[in-house]
Amino acid sequence: MNRDIADMRKHYTKGVLTEDSVLNNPIDQFKSWFKETAIGEVVEPNAMIIATVDKDNIPSARTVLLKEIDPEGFLFYTNYSSDKAKDISVNPNVSLVFLWKEIERQVRITGVAEKITTSRSEEYFHKRPKGSQIGAWVSPQSSVIENRNVLEERLKEVESKYKDEEILPLPDFWGGYIVKPTAIEFWQGRPSRLHDRLRYKLEDGNWKIERLAP
Image (cartoon, rainbow, N blue to C red):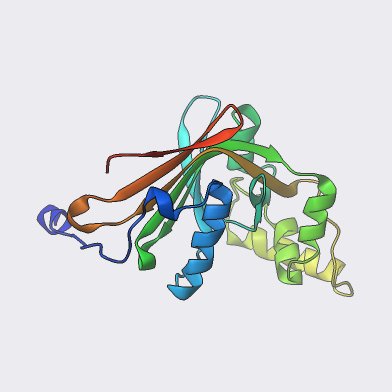
């Protein structure tokens, strides 16, 4: 088993990344790469790993979905009682990772997570399918529950309560965060593991581009 894992290799040949080919602003560069995920038929390109650290300095990582790219950063939504939200409340420093295997690219983002306004969260919440709005009300995210029936019963209650409404009220425990980046690294797979890595680093309000060894 271990021998098989050690022998797993992929030869990267689909692109190059040079300093003169990228945009000056990393968020603009991210948008450019994100558009190319459609051409490369990347599955769920908005899926991202977010890593947080709790009050005991224990890290945790999970997958969430990017929902908006803002000039200031990257937005996602969650239950404010979730573990990730609790972590952010004590340490807002987070890391995001996008892995687009189909086009041999990865983006790593280091930044600070901040809650967005209630009105902005509400605007997005009301654009969600009704089933997703119901799901937000049903799930006490990250809490220990006795069994699946707890969710099923709660689902019946919420569905009955709002059976005649298409738009549900925004839960006070649910909303969005924006991750404002301080560093963004773009990774392009290259042959012989000599990958291209360009990092944008925020220094005195300006973005500095530097190449990292693979």
